Image 1 (spheres, rainbow, N blue to C red):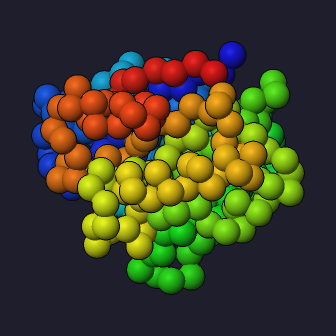
Image 2: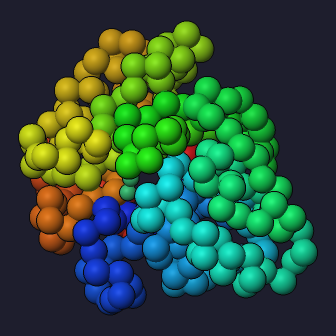
Length: 258
Ligand SMILES: [Zn+2]
Ligand SMILES: [Zn+2]
């Protein structure tokens, strides 16, 4: 059994000075088996405290990219300071991120898309993401986690599925049990759709991925990174909006077992 907890599920259009207030979704953050945290940006510390996550049980932090809602060096340092154990955290991230952290305080692993490694009992592959950054040279990453015959794709932030990622999944004959997917917009055709998905894009990708065998009837899709301004406000309305798509809508604190 693999346990997921969605700590922060908002895109970067929330007022995070009000984190903890009703209706304020935190910056992106998901924890797997209480050990692997993915992303720690603007609300990265509050994401852990408000859901009583055990800091000492954390083994590793994976970063997708250096946008501030996913990575802030001061957040990572705050997490380190809150730990009582002197076991060093593993950091898996691009060089643009690892160079911003003190190398003596962490086990830093500089990776690029297409890297295979293992962590906390998972076989992991970093994958390509279509999510250009202002610094142009940084390569954002999605992650494929594999354990106990289960395959999970963590795919945010990013627009579409990068062709190379689709290719790798096909070559390795990966059928996904779970996709955690960038669904920044509900409405179709928004200007953000060059960097982020909207529901129209997901509705186009799902049947195509079925043809490739990457998505099957057993695949669970969880929509994440939801923009305040591009989705209905309440969780109930959001779920109703995608009821026919068979997708789940992430919310802060949501748990999911695979
Ligand atoms: Zn983001
Ligand atoms: Zn981003």
